[in-house]
Length: 502
Ligand code: MN
Image (cartoon, rainbow, N blue to C red; front, side, top):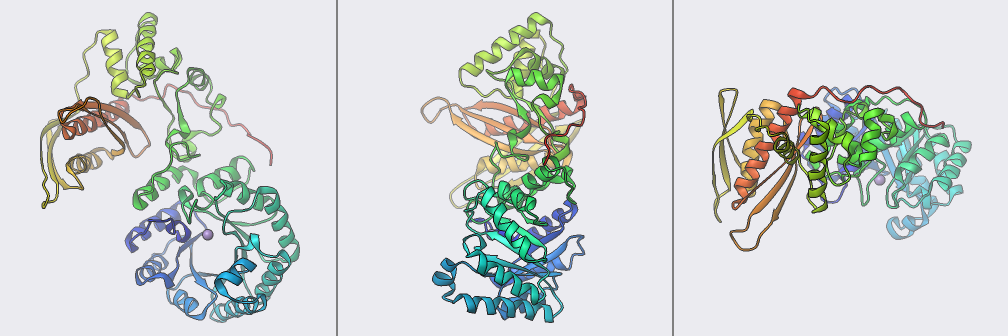
């Protein structure tokens, strides 16, 4: 949580930090670095709040190798203090303006000081991977003699590759008996690989961040490291992997940092399939193109219709829609899907449904959720406000919300109701003008998601972008409700397989 919150532009309130910490504790994280108390009064409050919340995880606070930092951390009643000082000549010369001997003394005294006050201590040699290894080991020996419970090898600026970091960790491991932690940054996209390499060389602990958040390109991502340790190394951690996805979404929502779609494990596309060959494969046997069972990380598999689609995928999607076209109808649906794909269209679930229904000559199912009324007020000196009235199963629901603009306030008002009724939230929103002029048709494509990770997409166009947005949102919510009613997974269970040997 500490390095993760150091992501540029991210800052959390004490309550938000507590919400994330509780989730991490449920997830099974061994130690939560709750914060860096010297940073701000709010940070002190947050660390105290988390340390006092009775979570299962051990709670840690960061401190420089200085008395005032350590005193502040101790005052927060944490279980563990993470003390750091830089050991590379680059940092000693340009930042700390200290000699190696001075830094050594400072490190040993700081650890001693915290140990004398009864705290557990993890010591980090900042910029360890650009430090002289002999000096680094000397520092680790010094702090171990002073009672440090663990030492950490941070690749602070992410400059290591898997082989050199394996060698470095092996060397440290031979020289000290204190348990070793890894702390890798992703500047070259190698944070996860380097962390795993450190583990192979004997490191017992890993510093990670949900969604790979952190300074610059971020830290090793929790979900990638955990799933790799479990599946590629066949080793256990205390993490309940089924909570990985909801944890990722919570962190993304509270930090405002969107997860890239092609991110491993938690990215939108990690369990999505479009290509006909792949879809055919997973329908027959998921392990053909899925190295991981999506349910293992709290997700569900989804199929995208588009120009790469094949007959088997479309057939499966029809079953999900509760439709059973003949072979000839199925071919016609596929042709129309590919046609739209070739025109560069992203096919939404609504598009697929309406294509299928027009081929089958069926009328659309009655919507479960209906928009009864909506009004939006906006202006220069007034806060955009929307109120909506929706109905479902004969009941009427009304909600009002404010937002940064009229679309935002209207969507938020709908979401207020859909979250309460069915835990459905907006996941993606895209707006395009499809003709010129102020009367241009605005086309909105949205994706919504429920608590179980079911997603649905929908599209709507109108001369008024607020109307288009609201209609697309209502359509998307209806899609998910419909899917929930119909979904008996068309895909069977999968056998357990070993992926690789460590
Ligand atoms: Mn860091």
